[in-house]
Every structure is written in structure tokens, then in C-alpha cells.
Amino acid sequence: MQNLLKPDYYVNSIYNINYQKLKDMGIKNIIFDIDNTLVKWKTPKINDKAKILLESLIDMGFNICILSNSSAKRVKNFTDNDKILYFSGIGIKPMKNKFYGALNVLKAKKEETCIVGDQIFTDILGGNRIGITTILVEPIDSNELITTMFIRKIEKKIKKKLNMNNDICS
Ligand SMILES: [Mg+2]
Image 1 (tube, rainbow, N blue to C red):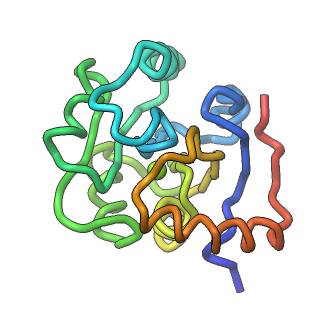
Image 2: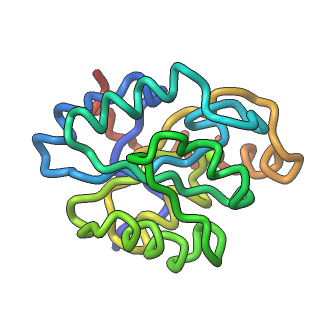
């Protein structure tokens, strides 16, 4: 049985992913988490570094969708380029509805889609539940919601036991 907490791939950061390799594997759509994946927690809008990366991925032919449990108002601040899509409808990760919402916005097939996120119990669990490729990154920063800081302790133990695949590191 598939371990729903195990990411398909593990990479240090969004800047260390070999995106060409992902493309060669047939991935056309990338869903990104915001907090501690694209930017530090509580960052109000996308920064230049992340924006340049997302725009370069769009230039490579990827469709990009932002998926966060944050408010719709804030999520929109990460999509100031019309080509960066987002889904902020009902549900919270790891609920399936939240992920199906993103697939819908992207008009994407599961087998051509991946999620990149820093949390096992939201990004990876949700992605695995609907059967898309899952990529775990290290959180950018240790400053987080108090509940997340607690969950990180459990995550750490799980990560040690998982034999994670880092084949898509650049
Ligand atoms: Mg996150």
C-alpha cells in the first residue's frame, strides 16, 4: 500500500528542482504552496526571486497554480502576473476538494501535475490522496504558526524513517 505521507520526491528548495527533468517526465502543471515554500511565512506578497522563478517556469511551458490555506485576498497577491493561476475556494489542504479545485483551474490531468510544498500533512498528504506527483521541500524558515511548529516535530520523526527520493535535484 502506498504511504500517503511519503512524497514522490524530496528537494531542499524550489530553487533546487530540476524542472527540465520534471518536464521530461511528462509534468505540465505545477501547483505551489505559498508559506515556507515560495516565501517565508506571513510574507504579504510574492517577492522578486520567487516571481522570476515562476515566470521562467511559465516560459518553459508549465502551467502554474498557487494553492494555499491562506485567505483569498492574500493568495491573489502571489498572482500579479495573469499567467499565474490560483485556487482559493472552499476547503483546506489536505482535503481533496482543495486539490481538485486547483486541477480544475489548471484544466489539468492528474498524471501531468505535481504539487510542491513544505508540509507532509497538508501538501504531500493531499497530493497523494488525489494521485498527483508530490514534491517535498524544506521549509524556508522556522518561524511559523504555533500549531505548525508542533506538527514539525512529528514531521521530523516521519522524515527520518522515509527513504526519500531526491532524483529531481538540480
Ligand atoms: Mg507551507
